[in-house]
Length: 303
Ligand SMILES: [Zn+2]
Image (cartoon, rainbow, N blue to C red):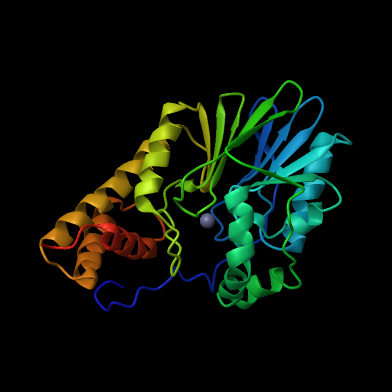
């Protein structure tokens, strides 16, 4: 950790297999979530069912998960046309898209598509190295290009339900996307997690904490009634402010410590210790160190 200058990823080697399981739960009229049940590297998967079409949000990691999500979508949507989109390119969110290749119209925003092309192979290698069970789920994965690439935002009229897909400035990734259904249900991807420290992807210089805070401010302003995080329990808009408060705390401390002349290692160690104490119920404290270093790197140096 911070004290050694050797930050470590959360250890998932003894976690349950990263498999999307269970029945979709209706969280709002026509909006279903297959909950992650807090299993590492399983996302919350969304299925929005309109009168005319249905939209799937995220697939889970690998072919088996993608096929399971497709099966659940078909069960709910019958033979309505399907759309598929991803909150961002990370493997546990989007690397099951192959299963939908001939079954759905696939949409990504431009930055997300480009980021998948740029980094998909490196993330695949990194994830395969995490544990044999994860490598097994990723066996034979092929990257899936979208049928439709959009800039800014796009609105899908599903018949009785409307989904707005919107891209943002770089934050958790360069190509984060939210899906806002009926001005009511927000799919936030990994911009928002319930009771876990926000994930700062290591060795990835596109993660932008300042951008992230700015995006969360705009998401709060949407005042969603229901918030579906990338990971963790479905909840409400209070969660957006909680995540923002944490990021703002780390930003402030990193800037203060750097201005005082602390090294990156010392700043990360101090921030790590304080945040573990303050957010005791949050999982994956390993991410604090990465967040602290990202904010430290972005802060003005001591003068
Ligand atoms: Zn992610």
